[in-house]
Length: 146
Image (tube, rainbow, N blue to C red; front, side, top):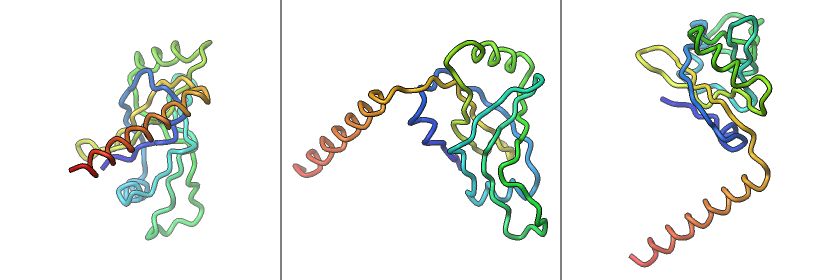
């Protein structure tokens, strides 16, 4: 199972990708396995030499008795020191940001694919939409002739 952040792929050119572990509670794991996670407004922030996933919405698991659960609290990402230093150097002073591209399960543990993204301009987005529409029309015509 792989949950992809389509909003990040639409708004950013992903230059580099890094795989990171994530610290979750048991109820959050169950909620993600049920497919209940929203990465649309999420981003990655580096504070005090540690990486955090901020604003990722993991709704409360239905069978959880805890009432004061915050669905969008910051979650720590597990990266090596040299990876964090490398990402900090690439983000500082440049027009780039760190965004979660996808979350998936690997060897019974959840991993977050963090992308170093550069913002797309509006004309880039329109160009991609036009190419996608053109490709769809070509495929429809080919299917119609068969």
